[in-house]
Every structure is written in C-alpha cells, then in structure tokens.
Image (cartoon, rainbow, N blue to C red; front, top):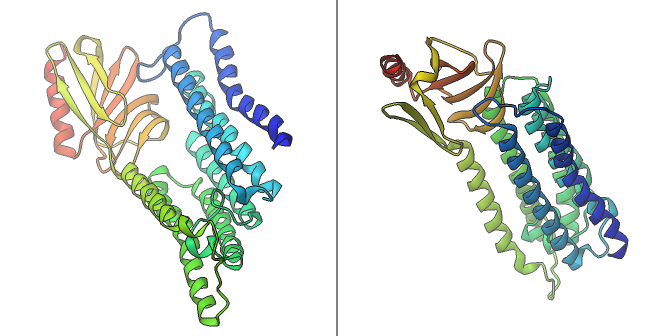
Length: 352
C-alpha cells in the first residue's frame, strides 16, 4: 500500500491538471468570450470545475474500494495500475470537449469520442485476463467468483469480447453519428452479457464433468446477488439514458423559452431574432457538447452549413426552424413536420 502512495498523488494531480490548463488558457484572453448557445467562458469554467471534483471523488472512491478488497492483495500490478489511470484519461478527454467548445479547436469531436472509447475498451480487454479473482475488478458473477477455473476462462473470453468491441467502435468512428447510436447499444449489450452467458455455460459444463467446486468459506459466494442487482441497475440506467429526453416551447409576450429535460433551457427575445427560416432538410452534423439519445439531440453542434450552432431537435424529424440571434444560429426541430411548421409560423407571427 505504501508503494502506491506516489500513484495516488500523481494520478490525482493528473485529474486536476486539465482544469488548470483550461483556466490558464481562458485567462490569457483579454475579454469574456461567448460560447455557442449563450454559454460564456465563465460558465464553462464552472462546468469544468464541477466535472473535475466529481471525477476526483470517483477516482479516490474506486481506489479505496479496490485496495480494501482482500482479493486484490496479490492482484496483478498491471490490473491495479489500470485502476489508477482510467479516470485521469477520462478527465483529459472531458476537458478537451470543453476546450473545443470555447476555443473552436479543429478536430472532429464525434470521431475523437469513438476512437477514445474503442481504445479504452481494447485496453480493458487486454488486462481482463490478467485479473486474479476478487470482487471489485473484472466480471463479477457467482459462477466465476466462486471458482478459479471459471474465473480464468470467463476473463479470457471476456477480454477477447472487449477487444473486439473496441475494434468495432474504431470502425464505427468512420460512420455517421446517427448510425453509431443504432449500433452502439448492441455492442454494449454484447460486452456486458456475452461474458456472463459464457461463465454460466462453462459452469454447466463443469457441473456435468464434476469439476466445479466451491470453498465452504468462500467470501465471494454472497456477492452474486448484489452483482446481479448492480448489473440490472446499470443496464436500465443506460437504456433510459439512450431513450429519454424531451423539450417543449413556452411562448411569452416578449420572448420564448425552450424548456428541455436533460439539458439547459434556452430563452430568446423576439426583438433579438435577426432572421427566421424554415428548413425542409438539414444535416445536424457533430455534437460538441450536450445531450443525445435515440430520441433527440440537444446542445452545441457543428456542421458545414451553419458552423457552430445550438440545436434542439428530435432525430426522426428532418425539417427545422433556423433562427439567427445576435449573429448565432439556433435550429429547432419538433416531434414531426407539422409541429415544426407550427413553431415556424408562431415565431414568424411574433417576430417584428
């Protein structure tokens, strides 16, 4: 444990380093910059600060739980090392998203996200077979937790599945984002459930051959039911996240507000609208920051036609209402073509 102290300090510093770099870059600007969607650099500093505190808390909690697990006392050094550096990598990635939004950095965010996830899954898949039996790292199902042979075979198989899933995401990085959302969930489900199914089938094979044994005092025997609950909660949460989200428009006397679930609201004064246009079709482009699901996309987007712009749109609708507000572009697409047309007509009547 004492030998790991320097890793605690260094990895925690690496999590905080991106926000320090971001703060230095922001303060080199002589005046406050306005980010697409009405956000300012001050807002982004708050977002990055909160994000860093949360990541640091998650990092320290994961390390504490991992080190308290007696099954990790003789754990592979490479497996333990992975725990130290995953969150710092995520911290650099998350801060990079904010930097792109503020400084308009010239890289394709969607491509960057898919490549990073692919490489991360491949890294984890490479280390899974090296994990020794414990209940904080690896694939935690009863049949593997209670039997070394089942654990080893499950993690060899799981490692291959995660590496292949990482390769699949690298390929998906070269396809449109809309296609990615359709294919990402199946890949994620295979990553989660294929190793679980393999462990169970291998357990059945062991039972049939009479080679499956459990230690009477095995501390991992009671963890199976908790693991199942955790897996179900995670799967349900991911499914809800990928299928939820909504927004509605509230019209007032002098302005209107896009009231959004899962993302920030947007209020626009009618006298600030410089131009309004009905779009028969448009390409949403890449999301730089915001919320996205199978149902809709909201936040800061970028495409060749509009550049950086703010979007509130249901994915099934190809039509949109384009507003030019103080030189910035805002696009709104409702649940269907009729509802989108109604928004255009209502705003056109209110804009002087």
